[in-house]
Length: 127
Image (cartoon, rainbow, N blue to C red):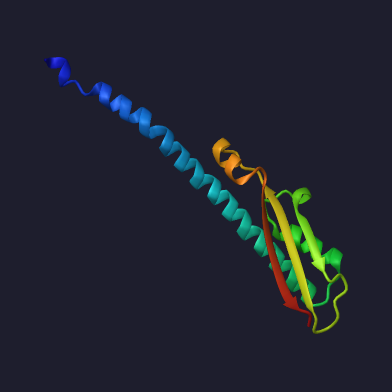
């Protein structure tokens, strides 16, 4: 009857059932954090570019500012759209920045697609 009270096997089975769910949850938190960080960075870069364009700089200066403001993002992957290219005074200037985020968790990448595109836009009135 002593083998009935032995609980070591029960703990191993519980670990085998709970560990995959816990690792999936932990991976989801990490991937969500990476995507959110990229979203904040892209929005910041779009605001910086729109502000520079609002004070009268050209498209090349705006693109350079956006890439400088993007921080740790890979410059070659950043897509920048500026409209209109030659804004007039008191018109609206919109800068849209998009960036692909590579998802590394296999299950999560199948759900959200790989890469997951993050976009940010800022609109300001030209002074």
